[in-house]
Image 1 (cartoon, one colour):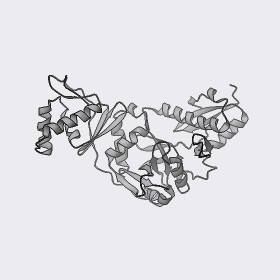
Image 2 (cartoon, rainbow, N blue to C red):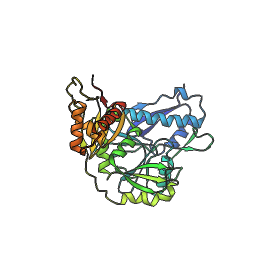
Image 3 (cartoon, one colour):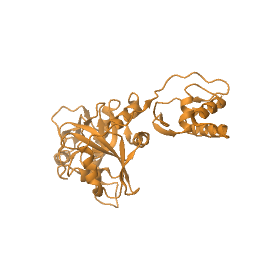
Image 4 (cartoon, rainbow, N blue to C red):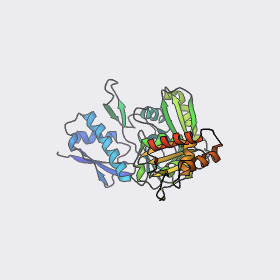
Amino acid sequence: MAVAEHVVVRALGVAVAIPARDPDTAARLRRQWSRALTTETAEETIDVSELADLAPDQHDYAVTARVTMRALEATAGTRLNIHAGAVAGDTGAALAVVGASGSGKTTAVRALAARLGYVSDETLSVSADLSVHPHPKPLSVITDPSQPWRKASVSPDDAGLRTPPAHTTLRRIVLLRRGHGTDGLVPVSTPEAIVEIVPQTSSLVLLDSPLLCLSRAIERCGGALALYYDEVIDHLDDLVELLDSTPEEPLPGVHHPPIDLPAPTGGQWSRRPWLDAMQYDDELVVMVIDTAHLLAGLGTTVWLALAQPASAAELVAVAQVEHGAHPDALGLVEAALAQLTERGLVSRPG
């Protein structure tokens, strides 16, 4: 495919080149990426060879996805990358709205960015010190509800969105729960937030102690909140005001990194390999491969007790010390072990 020129944009702090097939395409892309254009030498270049026959709206949407993916690949293992929109106030404090595709991130960001600076409508990249690397990509807007898979790419300038300060820092995290009631902002426990955010991350497993990194970010933001809403416009004041206060950090969790355990013998149960784990009182989040599992109560007790392989009888003894005597203690422990086994967290004897 012939290339008229390369449009270079800065995405998540990475200079990415977009090959343009003709001058009109280059001009259209420059307009859409107006907030991200850079004269830097490109560090990465996306492949657009498969997009040559697409209509302009489909081509541009695919370009945006490829730029984002290339930037995520370039930063994998070095930052906390989350499928989230973000806006920032004049002081540089940033608010992240987290949710899966279709949860309303772009709508929320467009509404918020009439009052706060537009950072991104879909991807948040955060360093260890909570510095945010902006991704002021074109907004992906559904123009025909009957074809929600087709989205127009709209420049944040054309959408009238405010510009954020040059340097922003993550301050608050909100989980979008549209269509699940209208209670507004509700605090969420850190374990619950971790389990909800993990599926919305990219390359989290490549970080050292991934759950520790994520939990520390949540804690330093004063914990996470969930927004229960139908129309985000009804909650704009509450969301904006979140950045006006200094959040109080919750008590930190206890980190349980992977360790080498002795091999079980005889009738002993044992833990399966895990990537990382964080404990908050009787709640525990254990990450196996790329999935975060939330445990509570007896499940937490049993998993922690298996820091050394143990028999069912030994686990019953630990459970009774922790939770008190029970006439069906063995049955309850066996049920907990069955659930942990089904979730790939422990191995049966033998």
